Length: 120
Image (cartoon, rainbow, N blue to C red; front, top):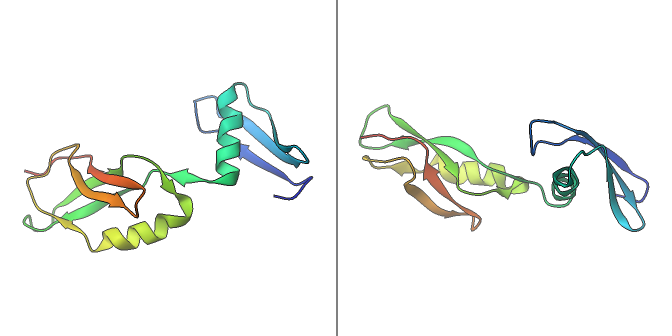
C-alpha cells in the first residue's frame, strides 16, 4: 500500500464483523472501525501477509469412490493456496483414516494436513 491509500475490510475474528478502514500513513497502517484490538491485528495481517486454512477432500485409494475431508492444522500463505491444491490433487490416503490423523505432513513447509472425518 502507498501512503494515503485506503482499504476497507470486514473483520472475521469474531461475530461482530466490524467494518474496518485501513489507511497507510507515514508511521504505518492506521486502522479504524474496530471495536477490539483483534480488528487492528486482523487488518495488519490481512494486508501484509494474508493466510488461510485450506479445506478439501482426498481420495481414499482402498475404498472405491470414498473421500475423506481434510484441512490444514494451521494457516498457509494465501499466495500458496493454488499450489497447495495442485500438490494435494494427486494425494491418496489409505483407510482406515481417523479424525485428527496427519495425512500429509508439512504441506509446502507451512502446515500439516489432517483428516477431519473418519473412513474405516
